[in-house]
Length: 78
Image 1 (spheres, rainbow, N blue to C red):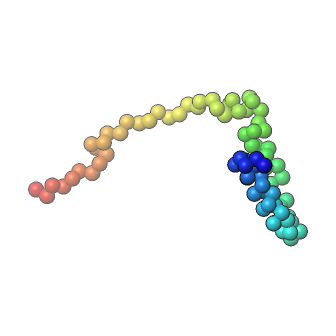
Image 2 (image 1 turned 180 degrees about the vertical axis):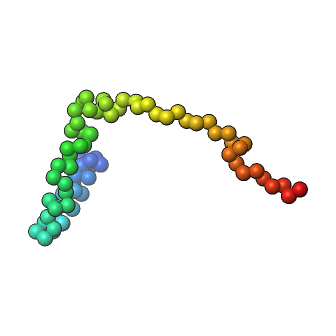
Image 3 (image 1 turned 45 degrees about the horizontal axis):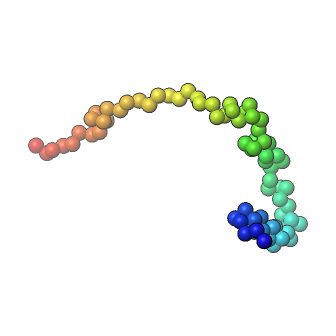
């Protein structure tokens, strides 16, 4: 038997599904899951859309901060 992490995850998922199968009658998953939860998933987008999302966007340049005037003046108590 394959003991990879993926295989173990599949076995755990199927065991959980069997244990919780009785809940389907009183708490059907369809009421909790969106109609098309995969519609906007990255794996199901077109290559053009994926490339557009990966394209760099123009960002506001970081402003230089004058650290000497930005901090409060220490009162030496003179």
